[in-house]
Amino acid sequence: MARPIYLDNHATTPVDPLVLEMMLPYFTEQFGNPSSAGHSYGWEAAAAVNQAREIVADSIGAIAEEIIFTSGATEANNLAIKGVAEAYFSEGKHIVTVQTEHRAVLDPCAYLETLGFAVTYLPVQPNGLLDLEILEKAIRQDTVLVSVMAANNEIGVLQPIEAIGKLCKAKKVLFHCDAAQAIAKIPLNVQTQNIDLLSLTAHKIYGPKGIGALYVRRKNPRVNIAAQLHGGGQERGRRSGTLYTPQIVGFGKALEIGLAQMATENQRIKNHRDRLWENLKKIATIQLNGDLEQRLPHNLNISFRNIDGAALLLGLRSTVALSSGSACSSGKPSHVLQAIGRSKAECAASLRFGIGRFTTAADIDQVAKAVQQIITSLQQIRINT
Ligand SMILES: *Cc1c(COP(=O)(O)O)cnc(C)c1O
Image (tube, rainbow, N blue to C red):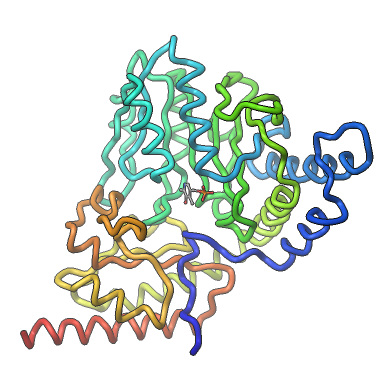
């Protein structure tokens, strides 16, 4: 039996074959430890890591010294938030973030609350966007950090990063941005957008899992973070642990491909997304989640009123692999959809479509048809019972 069409590209993406090809020699022949400064095995690995570090830095307008490799965006977010909290606690113990952030931002913040920090979790507007006036009012004398994501992983909305950066700079508060869903999808520049710390990951952009990075600003201002992993002193003592050369090389290559294709891919993917939405929006009980304009072209997120979410997912399972409005691990209703006003039942009857590099027009048509069919049959059941 054919596998379902993959439309869960916000959860993860396959490794691009060109990325894998680039990684392979670093598992075997060029296996050296990049920290081994005394022989050519180490030098080869260090050269490969440096090259990837340049690519990562370039992709966001930073310099190589500002990049710390981590195991992914979860670790980068933890290092940014806990690292800043620990380094600046004598200046203030207040953090501002948003209710619709990823759990890898919300949970480190909640952890800091148990240590005596205060955290403000800002609401969003019904379209999923943060209101800048509300943010400005939330910043206090003792605020040290504002953490707002660039692109939301569930509803794809793009927060006004540049304006937030400007506000934080004016208020002399550090600005951290989780850009896991944004890198290679929208232009990012830590200079023009006034970002002080930025989290990245490779596996959402056709790179390998288990590798990401944190950008930490070195000038205007120089940002300090307290290390969260102690040991061999790699990454200038800010993140110990032997550098994972193959993954780092793969991250660099994935970024290179993603950036080169960004403009053309965004247009192609937007055409698919718009076609899907045109087909689905005729359904009477449908609701769009998140702003349609300030949004990643890759994302469509919809809820249905008066539809049994479990039956909906079951009905689609063999046709399409996607995520619903209940976090897969817990079955709990999505905190993002709840923050934009969806009920628990609507969360359960929600679908997140993540369109990617390997999605075709035929995939889109097949998925649209499957959704229309299952909704019609579920509405039929309601009428008959
Ligand atoms: C996927 C994701 C993360 C977690 O990234 P990992 O590399 O899997 O740890 C964090 N934030 C956002 C917005 C994400 O989409």
